[in-house]
Length: 275
Image: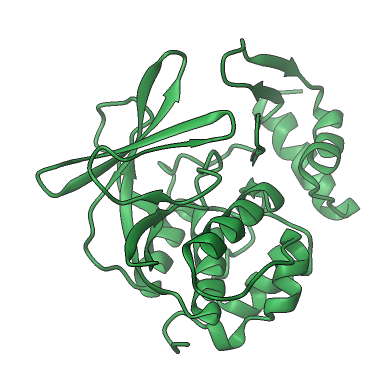
């Protein structure tokens, strides 16, 4: 374990209970796949602390209190930091990396997405647990590598030192994000976290957002719109009332807010839609 990633601070038993993992604890590729799948399908992506104007703390104890013991989800920086601590505790060799979200856009966005480069069974893997629509399992970090994961397909390509993760969507490969193998550290994640939580041009600014991946579906909440994506099928959009959003957070994403926080979320949505 390293002091850098905080594996010694992680309650591994509690983390595994949170994600429903009961398997082997050796640093193998099979364990890496199983733990990433359990993490991605158990802990939702959500930005509610940003909506509640609450600091997003990447220290391990607050992270565990929120994502592990508190039943909440988190943003990219929170997910990746917690997952890194788990890999550290399990004895994996890994480094942090960062990239730029594309989602089919040619706009140059800030380097704001955190991922991990992990070595297991003498192969190198991309582990991306904090995107919301993250791959269920690692993707081998090799040019042209493809991975079919239940209903989802992913591919990695490399060009002039930059890697691009692609996802098969609507009959074509969509550029999800691009990253380099330049080593990044927890302090770099903290800078990214601060920008995404506070900058007025952040993609998360002023929006209530949550996402949950499953083997055959991706469910997305953006303000009052609840969307279900299933590969090969038309997406299903449901427009919720402001008062229904808090219930959807609990029922669909497992994020239960107390009355004080629920009231703030309703107020933010009402102000956004001038209700």
